[in-house]
Image (cartoon, rainbow, N blue to C red; front, side, top):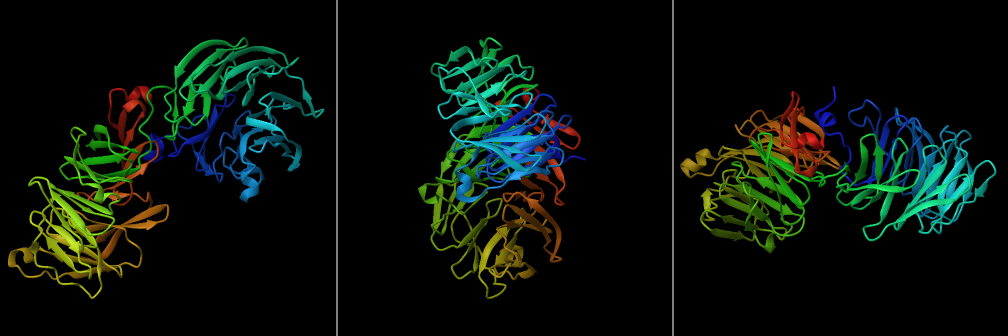
Length: 609
């Protein structure tokens, strides 16, 4: 069975798509993003079932053979390869790397219709043709340019642009250039018509039509103003050409190049990649999606978190607030979000931007309610509970504010901090690694300092949600536990106990409601693992691996929340099983899914799915 993400998040790119191609004969489509990730979706597939990496980005250099069985890709290191679209097996490859490859970054590739030849145009103007049956290079010509190369329907002629932006048509039988009239406006892209009798060429300043038989320039159309032409597409039935600009798609009827339509494509930060499939023109944006109109999407989820019924997803410089599977508000914030926390009542969100101070926003209105000041820029940690917000600045120490009492406090010496989720207690670590529990309303000790578990400095701490319990982790990786309830009653220092020794790095710690379990996040490069530990038994009871490095644990119920592809937030059970997907859609719409189907959706969600 497909996962929830595979079922309901069809897009596999969370980086800008820089190449796209569609084969009208088979209905196969392929896309590539700027990380080198390639996705192939064949007819009958709801989502791309073949996803692989080609190395660096394949900018524009992606092409399907007629019939869709092979995919050619050329990357920014100058490597060109042909892959089978059923299993990703490499059919042909010429590998390059280092400086020699980067000056020969690929900008266009094509496979001949019968699959015998591969052609590629590189950034340095070298046009090459390989005989794949013999696994060797057949031709190489200098003095070319542009971002396209194509074989005619019979595979006997090769179409490209020369260094002056003029159409060059090479006969591969005689190895001679055929005559073509000079274009009035230089072009960067050229396409054969579906029957191979015409050539459509386009550049920033206009679009032109030439006849192959005699090379005559039949028609041309110059653009005036606008953002210029970034790509040229032909409709699957061959009756129309589409000139894609940064904002719009301009459609011309063939064979006379008559303008028939212009419409906005809605791709934010259009990359120039586009395709014309049976569903129409789709243009790639910097959000990792293909767009066919409207106002664009929210973009990838850059942080996901939540508490109880509440979830938050950061989309760059916006926050989406969800409650019980419904999005209640989407609002802009100041700066790109690095981390965000929502209080357990779902009233306030504390945003830690990549640059700028920690700022609080009202979840009901999206209005900024408090700015913690420039000293908190680049904060290492933030806590939010009740009416209290606490921040650990990058420069050290701890600052906190009781917004209900309109008071602020500052200590210069803490090396770590944790705020209880109700805002009742603030735990801090002294320069010698000892723990103190403060009353945020006064800054004084709320209970006597707990007795250290060992002569090892504490480096991390967290309160257990809705209980007077404290979790600590020392510099040697020993997890400890304190029950502070007797200390609060008697005024005597609390005595704790060791729970578990971990010989791996830990960068987050959560105490889960009920006091039976805690969760720890273990960073592992591009992924992380979440461990669930039985506090009383001192044993790991669950481990979930291969998560996003930004995976978050809900301290109310122990559910795991992490960013997912297609502008989505994924919720998992403690055993890692997918539970729910909350997804932002283009044009400000949204939808949430579970295993039984749609949980909730905005009124216009169906129109943009």
